[in-house]
Image (cartoon, rainbow, N blue to C red; front, side, top):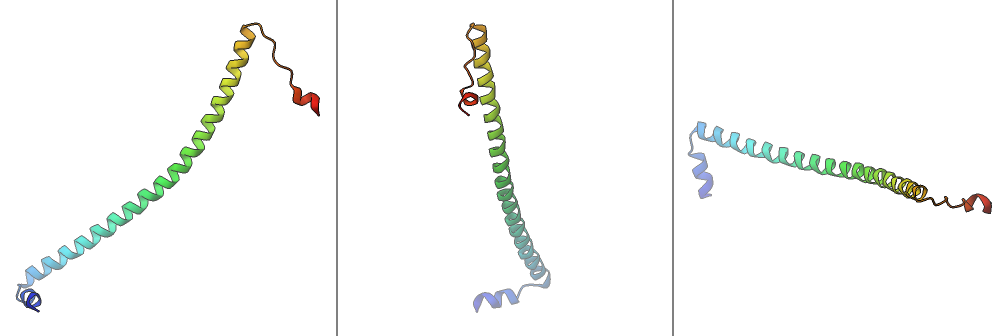
Amino acid sequence: MFGSTLLDRRSKPERVADQAWQQLLAAAGSAGDSVRDAARSARRNSSGLADDATDLVGSAAEEARRRASLAFDALAGRRPALPWTQFVR
């Protein structure tokens, strides 16, 4: 009760300023929530893209290792291994 009588005794400009301040705080709070949600969404989406890129780079690295090993063996004079999967069929 005591606080409500103090608020009633303020001048009209003070009440308007207080209402504007409260609206500004509410708008800033909701904007912060929106930004937080957007950041979460972006993090989830970029995580998926990073996983895809990791898979792609990983498979390219495996292929590069395989080719480098074959090139090293060829330079060392070793013959390539027989493709046993073609004979087993």
